[in-house]
Length: 404
Image (cartoon, rainbow, N blue to C red; front, side):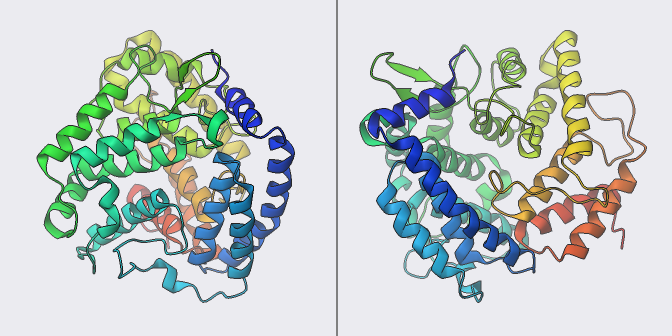
């Protein structure tokens, strides 16, 4: 099995022999700024502008060797923390219809847009402005060309890992094309972008062609100097492609085999982050198993069930506080609310909160409903009200009712 984490680091070092030292130095500059942001968010302020600055800083740090741009972005992030009045950064931009005015990278604006569209669709509200910023993928031909341009990274030559941009845009396109409520929303309410059946079919064909026939997974491809093009098995990209298509994909046996085989590898090419499990990845894995459960044999189901039990025990004993809180990991999550959202999502997906028998085991969990209420109370007592904390609370209320 190829160690893609090492391969990517080695490719960055070919591009910049001082890469490791530079990345460490900039990580040390980013960490205290992120801590200040987290403290501000704990007061209930989403700090939308600073949050966008931070997300782009993390992308520059992890996916590029562009130290000049990162330096400027860190300065902008630090300056943004001086003013806590940042509600303006959550609104749609009139000039091009985008969201995320503090982002410089186009794909991050796309990612912000799909979050906003989900919220607008739930509220039954049309956007105020046409989606002119979607021009780079506005036709089937442009969309395919953009995806092809991002599918393969040549880090040794340009110092850029395209995986994150590819993942953000494909996750957005999959929601647009396969989530019925989002597809209908685009077709009924969005101006400046025409989501036709031809567009959806073209994307579906490209997505199917991208799936690796050996692993069953999707992932970024990496051009190397001496080994040619190597195809990664990416947990996050695979999860999005399976989840938004509601499990209607091929090669389920290969998907299970690969998912089980990469358990102890580092994210995104495995389940672990900093040598330990992580609720975001636990959720992704458990939902993959759920969607493909009926497509694999009993032995494979038993192996998957054993691993779900393993990460469930980790979640309950290692990721949570006794009062029903989730321990934040700023090296992975972008906000405290995100730590709650993915912890709740995993427990909900594993069937821990409900009274029905979960798909992977033979009885419900007696302690689940009480923990559901405890987490609700913790979210409210901490005053968390960003979008992810609100989404976590909605899942909890759906699972066990309002415990107030």
